[in-house]
Structures are given as C-alpha cells and as structure tokens.
Length: 251
Figure (cartoon, rainbow, N blue to C red):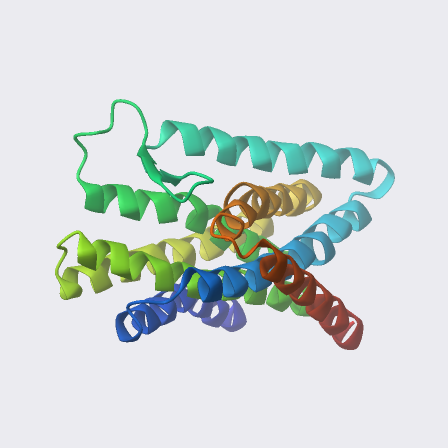
C-alpha cells in the first residue's frame, strides 16, 4: 500500500513538476514540446501493451482474449463519451482551440481544468489497476509512462493561462488540482481491483484502452500539428523501445 501511495503522489506530482518548468521557461518551443510529448506517447504505448493488455490476456484464462478486446473498446468508448459530454477546450489538428457547443459562457479557467482532468482520472486509474495485478515491475512501468506524459502536459498549460490573465498563484493551484485528480484516480483503481479481483482482466484491458485512446486521440494529434512530425515519430519510437528494454531487464 505504501508503494501505491508513493506512486500516486509521484504520478500526480509529475504534472506539478511540469508546471514548475512551465513557469521557469514560459516560451517553450512547439518543437521541443512535441519531441518530449512524443517520447511520453511512446512510453505510454509500450506501458499500455506490456503492462496492461498482455497481462489482461494472461489473467483472463480461457476467454482472456475476448475479455481483453471488450475491455479495450469499453475503455476507449467511455473516454470518448466523457470527452464529448464534459465541456472543455479541445485542440484541433491545426493547433487552434475550439469551444464545445453551448459552452461559450463557461469560465475559461474551468475549461482548462476539465480538459486535463478528463484524461488524468482514467490515467490515474490505470496506474492503480496496474498495482492491483500484483506485478510491481509492470505497475511501475505504467506509472512511469503516465508520469512522463504528465510533465510536458503540465509545462504546456502554464503559458496559455498566464496569457489569459490568470494570476500565477491561481495558475499553480489549478495545476496542483489536476495532479490531485490523478492521485485520486490511482487510489480508486487500486482499491477497485483489490475489492473485486475477479474483474482484474477486464480492468487491466479497460485501463489499457483508455491509455491507447489518449495516445491516439490527443498526444499523437498534438505532436503532429506544428511541423515536427518526423522528429516526433522517432521520439515516439525511442520511448517505446526504451520501455521494451526496461521490460526485458526488469522482467
């Protein structure tokens, strides 16, 4: 349990760490941001497959592959539904921000928070579910992937909020809140699997599906929107292969 709490704080704290970097370096170039975010996408991609999806098949027994496929699609669809129902700022492929319909009057600060929280909660749950499987090395790999993704995420949210006129103190509190959402998600995932171990294969696949959705729908889209596609692609491959090496060494 102590390891789970430390990991939850580490995963949530990664967003805050990224926010601090964002305060120090307010004008981070799109190229650097895309390279870092792509590396994190590669790490998350490997973590979702090696740490969640393959174990789901293994623990699922005779019908493991069916449970896993259903779990992956359920996780992705649930995140897609949340993405559509919850008002937030959505980044388009051209780098512009579009307000969801009927949400133009909602305070922009709330939209920023919701945009991040939409993905932080299921990411935290994924980290917690990883520990619920009992495989500490896989769980750490998943948490590392999510934490690495949270650092550039924390970096890129600071400048837009400061530019919008939000005071630095309030900006930091917002970043801290989004990190706490991830801590809550980690604990929820861990306790849910421990209370009902029978759902472990489905929960692992569900968490893997949410991570794959985030990588495809948000991270890759964002890193290919500013002219750094080639560098972003190789950075993703590097992150993916690095996690493969860690999996072999730690396994």
